[in-house]
Amino acid sequence: MFLSVYFRGKYATVCRAVHKRTGTHYAAKFVKKRRRNQDQMNEIIHEIAVLMQCSSTNRVIRLHEVYESLTEMVLVLELAAGGELQHILDSGQCLGEMEARKAMKQILEGVSYLHDRNIAHLDLKPQNLLLSVEDSCDDIKLCDFGISKVLQPGVTVREILGTVDYVAPEVLSYEPISLSTDIWSIGVLAYVVLSGFSPFGADNKQQTFLNISKCALSFEPEHFGDVSSAAIDFIKSALVVDPRERPSIHDLLDHPWISLKTNLPPALTLPSEPTPITPKSTPISQRKSFSCITSSPTEGSPISKDFPAHLRTTLTGSFSEPGVHDCGDEEPSQEPHS
Image (tube, rainbow, N blue to C red; front, side):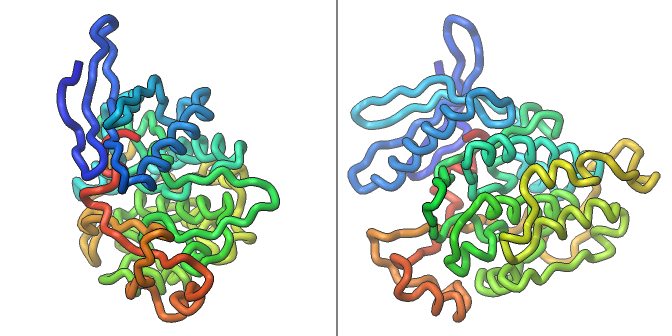
């Protein structure tokens, strides 16, 4: 029985559902089957396969059942009643450091489970991190595996995908994707939850891409003045342009900020309340409609003008024309579950 609609997009609708016999609540994701929407269907089938591989961890949203009719597929998923981590940021707040550390440790645990199975998520962002309880980071789960990749030894994967503020430099320059691509996104996530701002965000996508490719990183005192040096070191260690120089997911789990092998400043050991954002530039909560970068090899669309000139040159002739589309109304990643 369906109780309410959480999300309604171009290709998918997500409802809160309850099992009539047991009374258990679930999230039911309805995906329309259309002839001209084969890429979306392939993503859903891939996501189902990945979720089935992740059934033994509590850090990934759980898939319970899959139903298929002539017109749609239905994924019955674990209900994350707290919605997206993004909702906390949308309220104009970032996390206190102790809360941020707790959140990042759980995210690392989920990504570690994936990386141990050679799965790269490739779209780690607050919209794809779900809370079991509203406004609480006590239990965080990963979702939305539509563009994830199962990396095979000896197989090189190059593809333009991800979300603008969180995408790694090697994706923009059309270099091989690896598990380290997720490490960059983790560094961005840590920056965002601690400050409420994107480390590379600019007024337009082109400048954002340039900031990413140069790793133009700064820690403004008004946003990081009370943040420990261990937390800043964690971010810096992940945000390295060369993916070969980035730490592994297990290295990050062993980082002093996460493992607490170093002492945080005394003020940060107190119970952490969400810290109000002091506006300076556009906070992450106001960067509306996070755009997703996706490849579109069958449509032949021109290389997006949003890419910097040197990146367009790199892509020309070596890739089936990437496109940039707005994911505000179309991407299931805006829903409160996978």
